[in-house]
Length: 108
Image (cartoon, rainbow, N blue to C red; front, side):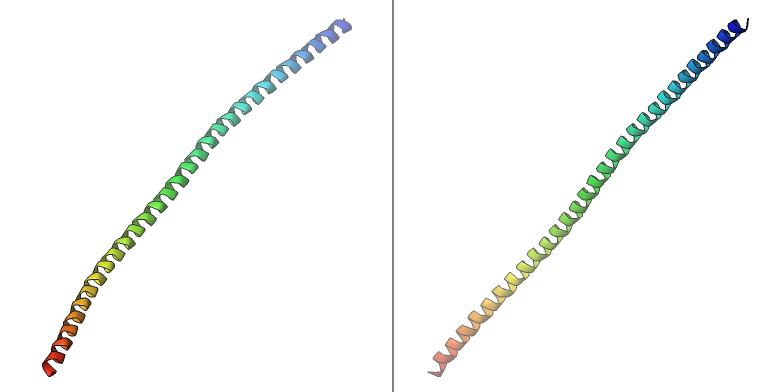
């Protein structure tokens, strides 16, 4: 009788061990699924960060381009203004030379 009870106990222990292994396997599987889900979320976050980084670079480049165009516009205006001033100076110089020439002729 004792031997039969001993066998029953061993079977129960083995069953408990099997159940424990099944529970542990399920817990490990659940943890793996959770980690896999976290990997997917991390992947999505990394791509969002890359997107935001690229957007920021684009925005910075856009602002640099706008600033460049603004400066270019100012330089064009300045060039135009200097061109007008040079033309006025050339006219003034020509008039001065003509006046000087006329004065020389008048004195003769």
